[in-house]
Image 1 (cartoon, one colour):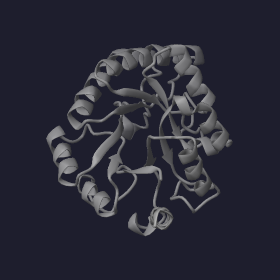
Image 2 (image 1 turned 90 degrees about the vertical axis):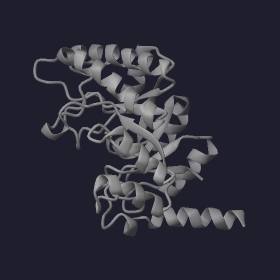
Image 3 (image 1 turned 180 degrees about the horizontal axis):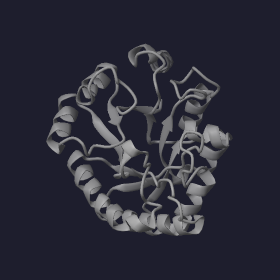
Length: 266
């Protein structure tokens, strides 16, 4: 059975952020992920994880001014210094919270930044971050995102992410494969995952359309979960979706999987 981590940025929004750890544990999750830890103290996050016996499996590098619409700064030539400072801050949190991998959102190029400039800056920044994280035993991930939800985002397809990984040439840079984003951009989910499994360190999910829980849209998640098991994917799957109702009401898909596995083991 795949291992599922609750994305606390998206799930359990019925309660304040720091209370979502307990809510996730109560719902049966053993791991969590979220976008950014930086608004909270390391000690507060450590205590919430420990009190609820949860692992933190992923968070992102600092991504600029999120509230103003920035979705990363790794593609911006005039923000390289800020990016590098952010890598140091991310490492500080990751080491304290025992996070094994960090994701980089590369961002949206600003006016005047050419495609070539953005790509060169992404490669330079990812190379720096991959090396810095490797010294600490932390994996670096890079995530393509769909251009419908994030117009102008610099990496939109699996092939683009893999091309950047090859250009960086680091053995510490991997793909974060978001099923929802890639369904919107390219489809061919099963074939792409199977072909590129060695490069995929983390998977995230949501159904399409709507970015809601599995079973609400067009994606055959039962098939994909079985595929991930059959090809030996050992990482976590982050539940990064918007519940259609309350979070707990939308967890029927996960309870069904748990029941199926319990019956198979009996």
